[in-house]
Image (cartoon, rainbow, N blue to C red; front, top):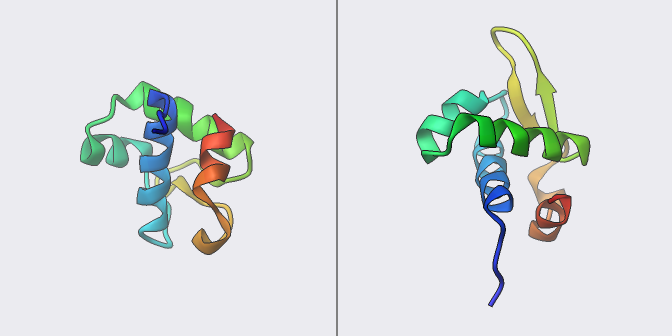
Length: 82
């Protein structure tokens, strides 16, 4: 059985939310939808962005989105980031 850390679980859920659309999604929105504490989700987003899996943007229409097509990102890529 594979066991994920809490941060990896949060990161996976963030990636799924980001993959659901082409536009930026805010971590605050994902936090509310997934019932994840916002500070933990922001840290997961930082890790994923540092590993080239997410792109971030600041401002009123900012947030996170996938850095490359979802078909090019594997579960192992996300788990290895953590």
